[in-house]
Image (tube, rainbow, N blue to C red):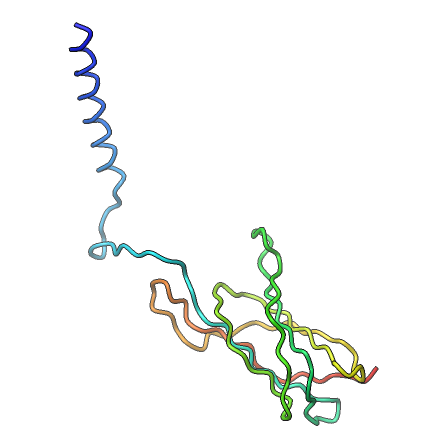
Length: 149
């Protein structure tokens, strides 16, 4: 009697779990659902020119982008590696990054002639993603003028 009860209970449990498994599958609206593995990824491009107040390009300025995450994330800010400006005052670099909403760029002179400064930027979507794991490319661009100390 005891083994019959256990067999019935096991069979009933298997049937119930089977129905629960089928009912957890969502309704297929637009065709089959693709199974994908990985993490979302994209590019974040910084393309900023740094000049003095008269408009002359500045060389060897540290340009440090800082990603500002919304307050509902555990990480509130994430500093990316600094870029040095070239002879034309340009700082250009592409980072592997996704989910970027707001960026603060910190400008710091290595020679000590110009005062440290920062500016907030809103990235612009410059390359669309593939609607799957690739989120595309967002770019921060512009010109920033530094003041002398």
